[in-house]
Length: 566
Image (cartoon, rainbow, N blue to C red; front, side, top):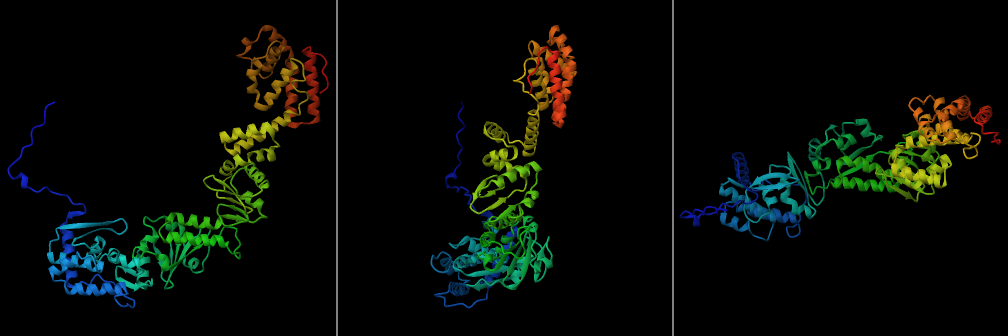
C-alpha cells in the first residue's frame, strides 16, 4: 500500500496558535450583544438593580446572612469603577458569593467587549448568555446579568435559600421575605395567571371542568378535584382533567417563581373526593387521610406527576378501607354483596364464579390492576378492576378448584384436569364457564339414557356409543367413528350413516354384507335415535320408556337376543 504524502510545513507554523474550542463559550449574536450591553450599562449605573425588595426585618451582618450580603454589595457598588479592585474581588475566595459574582459582572460592564459570551444552561431555569469574569458561580453571574428574567434572577440567592431565606419573583416584582415564607398577594395573582392551568374567577378560582359553586361549597365529584388555598385566602380548584392536559406541570409552573421552590410551605392542598357509595356523614379512614397527605406533599415537592395525582389520591383512600367491598372507585358495605356483584362487568356465569370465591374466603383480598393478588388481615374485598375476566385470570390459580367444586360439583382428577387446562390456556372465562356448563349439562342428560355401552352386547353397544357421542359433540363428530366399526359394528355404523344421510362418499368403506345387514337395521336405529333425542331434551319417563322399547326392537332385528332390563 502506498504511503500518504508527507505533511507539508511552512515557515512560522511552529509559532501559530491552535484554535481551542472551549465548552460553554460562543460568539454572541448582535441581538445578544445589544441586550447584554444595555443590561450591563444599567447594572453599572445602579449595581443594586438586581436586588429584591426587602420585606423583612434584618439582623446584624455578623448573624444575618442577608444583611451581610447587602453590606458587601453596598461596598462593591461604591468600587464599581475601580478595575483593579474589582479584578481582585472577583477572584477572592472569602466573603459573600453574590458580591464576588457582582464584581465580575461590573468588570465585564467596564470592559465593554460583549462579543464572546458564556452559556448558562439549566434544565429547570433554561438557557441564558452572560459574560464570565472571575471565580463567581456561573448561576450567580448569569442571574445578576439577566436580572430582568424573573425566574433566573432568583438563582443569585440560591445559597441564601439553602439557609432558610425566602424569595418571590414575578414579572412586576421581586421580594425577599426573610426566614418566613410569606407569599406577596401580587405574586399569588401572577403565579395563578401564568401557571400551566387556566383559571376563571378572582378570590375563588376554578379550572375547566369545575364551577364557582363546586369550589366554594367543597362539593365532591365522582373523579375528584384538587383544592388549594393560599396564605391570603385565595382558593383555586383544579379538575383532574385540567391537570392531565398540561405540557408543563402545575407545581413547577408556580414553584419556579419562588426560592426555595417549596409551595407546600405557602399553600394547603386537599383532594375533594370520597368513594362512590360512601356515606356523606361518615368520615374517611384516618389511615387513608394520612396517606393522602403524603401523596399531596409528594406532588407539591414535584416528586409526583400531575397525571398520576388523581389515581394516587383515590388509591390512598380506597386501600385504607378495611370492610365491605371495593371495586374501582366504588364501595359497598358488608350487606351489599349482591349489589357489588351486580356492579361488576361480566356474564352471570363469571359473577357466579366470583361469588363462589367470596363465599369461601377466610381472609380479605386485594386484586391489583396489574393482576397481583394479596391476602389481607381485614375482612375487605378490594378489586381495582371491575371487569370479571381479568379478576378471574388473577384469582383462578388460587381459587379455580373452589369454582369448579361450588359451581359444578367437580372434584378429584376430573376437576384437576379442567383446572390445569384453563390455567395454561387462559380462555375467556365467559366462554369457558358457559361451555363447561353446557358440557356438564349434556353429560348429565346422557347419564339418564338407559343401559351403558359396556352393559350392552355388540352391536347395540356401538349404537349406544354413537348416540352418546352425537349427544355430546354433535352428529358430525360421529362420522369417523361410524367408519371404524368392525364386523357387526360395521353394519351398525353403516345403518347410522344411512339414518343421518351421510353415506354418499362412504359406501366404498363398507363391504356389501355390512351394507345389506345395516340397511335392515335402519328403521329400528332411526326409532332409537329419535327417542334418544327426546330423552336428552325432555328427560321424561315416557321418553325413557320409548328408548327402552326402541333398543329392544333393534336387539330383536339385529339378532342380539333378549336384553336384560336397564
